Structure formats: C-alpha cells, structure tokens
Image 1 (cartoon, helix red, strand yellow):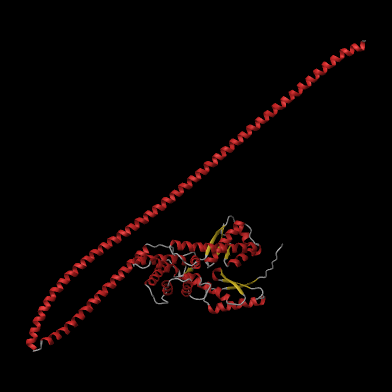
Image 2 (tube, rainbow, N blue to C red):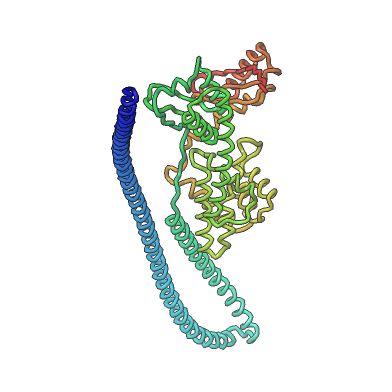
Length: 524
C-alpha cells in the first residue's frame, strides 16, 4: 500500500510542480518578450527621432535653397529691370536728339521761308522798278526815233530795225550775265546743301572702324594644358597648325596661348576648335581634325545667321540666300584693317539717310550700299577684282540694274547711270576716310601674305599653303603620291626662288614643304 500512497501523493505534487514550472517558464518568456518589445520600441523611437531630425534638416536645406534661388531670381529680375531702364533712357535720349534735330530742321525751314518771302518781295520790287524803267525806256525810245528821223533822214522802219538789233545785243549780254550769276548762286547753294546732307548723315551714323588684326588670345584653365596642346615631340601643335593654317604661340605667358594668322576666317575656326579641345581635354591628331571640321560647320552657320540679322536690321528683304551668306562672310574680311561688313553696313546707312534727304528710293539706296563690296567676300578665292566679282554676283542673283551700276561705279570703273550710284560712291569715301578707319601698312602686309600663299599654290601637287610667323615662314602641304622626298626639296627651292624674284619683303622667308604619309583602317 505504501507505494500506492507515495504514488498518489507524488502524482499531484508532480503535476503541481509541473504546472508551477510551466507557469514560471511561461511568465519568464513573457517577461523576456516584453523586454524585447520595449527594446524594439525604444530603438524604433530613436530611429523615428533620427528620421525626424533628418527630415527637419532636409526641410531647412530646401528652405535655404529656395531662399537662395528666390534671391538669385530677384537679382536677375532687378538686373533685367535696370537693363530695360537703361534701354528706355537711351531711347529717350535718342528721341530727344531726333526732336532737337527736327526742331533744328523746322527752324532752318522757317528761316528759308523768310528768305524766300524776302526774295519774292525783292523780285516784286525789281519787277515794279523794271516796269517803271520800261516805261521810261519806251518814252526815250520814242523820242530817240523822232530825233533820228530828223537827223539822219532814215525811215521809221529802218530806225526800228537798227534799235531792235542794238537792244537784242544788249539783252543777250544782260541775259548771259544774269544766267552766269544764277548758275554761280545755284552751284554755291548746291554745294552748301550737299555738305549739309552729308554732315547730317554722318552725324546720325556711327560704326566701328577697324577690326582685330592678326592675333587671338585663348585663356587656359591652367598651364598644365599647354603640354597637351603641344603633344609629344610637338605632334599635336603641328597637326593643329596644318588643319587650320593658324600658328599657335605657346610661351611663358601664364594662363594663355596666342593664335596668330592674317585670315580672320581661319583664326575664328582655330579659336573655336582650340577652346573646344581645351574643354574636352582629349587632344590628339584625330580629335583635332574632327573638332576643326565641326568648328568650320558651326562658323558657316554663324555666318548665315549674321547675314540674316544684318539684312533684318537694315530692312533689306528678298535677297538671295547665297548673297545673305556672303554678307555674313564679309565679317571675316578686312580691307586695310577695316572690317568690310561694318564698312558695308555704315555705307548702307549713309546711303539711306542721304537718299531720304534727296527724295530718292531709300530701300534701293540701302541695298546698294550694303552690296557695293560684296565681291570682297570671294575675291580671296577667285580671280578678278572685287568690283568685277561683285557685278557677276549681282547679275547672277538678278539684282536691280541700279545696284549693278552702283557696284560697278563706286571706284569710278564705270560711268554713273543713276544718282544712287553717286550716293554709294560718296558713302564709300566717307566710311573709308574716317580717322582710324583703315591702316595702310596692315593692308600691304595682308596683301603680301596672300601673295605668298598664292605663289606656293601655283605649283603642281600642292594642296594647301599657309603663311605664318608674321610672313617670315610659309608652310606648304603636298600630295604624298605626287611629290616624293627629292621633289619636295626641289619644290622648296623653286618656291623660295620665285618669292625672291617677284616679291619685296624685309628679312628672310623660310619655305617649309611638308609631305606626310597616312595609313588608316577600321576595326569592325
């Protein structure tokens, strides 16, 4: 019985113990779960606070950024307002000048009107005086006839014929004297009026006179880029000079290199190409050729836009697109140091102002002034004077015959067929003779450089020629297949000899013939 008793006693105790142990274990797990949940809640709270702080910081940054942007927009708006105010002020000044000019013209017209009235009154007085004199002459004539008849025994008709002949001679002499006085007075008046018209036109026109000479400065971000421009053993700089025909001067000048060349068109291409190469950072012969070609295309586009803007500013419409492009190209042509496009624009304005004063066709005069030097856009690349080439272009694109005559006559190569041609000649002389408008020495220098290149281009196998070093060196590029090494040596000597025989120049001129073999392939 005892084991059963123990069993009965131990069984509830074990169950109770198990229940208590299970309860303790469960409560322990629950406690740990609560602690873990509290820990997770605490970490979540901290993370939430961090996220909230970050969000507040981001919001603060955005507010500061928006404030900065608003401040910049405000400054920009204020700057635009200032510019508009300045433009309005300038326009007000121009209007005031025009008002003063109109007032002055009105005053002059009033004076002329008074002078005219005075002259009319004088003419009336003279007329009355002449009538009185005529009556007196008639009376004396009658008395003289009677006396002559008594003295000479001539008949009345014979006396009348004699007196008539005498009076006709006297009248012819008086008329000739009066005509001479009128002509002299008209000539003086015409000269005075012409001078007033020209002076007023010049005062109302202002334009730049001369253009950049032969140098362009390129600013560098740092001096380390100079090494890349030069390249290994000068490979890059030689490729650049051959591709553009412009000399690159890399010296000790900090933060800059200089482009030297007499042709503004080539120099503009070289400047754009070098700036893009510097910005890109990759400088090697292949990249140089690619960038130079892109720069040429961009410059052609700019030339077209410049021609269109010029025509729009001068209100010259219905020009052939090729003529518009040639007008833009005049910006890269100089004549004795004077920018030809600025010269043409100034001539157009002067012609328009003078035509308005003289009641001629203003639009036709402006068009003739703009196109009078159009031949200079192509005279560097084609044979013939700029006048001959300009006439050909005007006829080719069906310009008015008055414009063709103005182009032909502005250097007195052809007779003037219309007054507008005379206005173009006068405007051309005014624009060219302004103080500082042209530089004779620079013009001679540019002609010498052009002749240097033309001499080299006259030989067979020559593809390009560039005068560099201010005309002290000419570089000649030849076809590799047509000219071998021995022929290159002979070609350099022949060119040097021709230059020596045909040209006058200071110092020495070095002739360099460049023969290059290139091989290329494409990896597919």
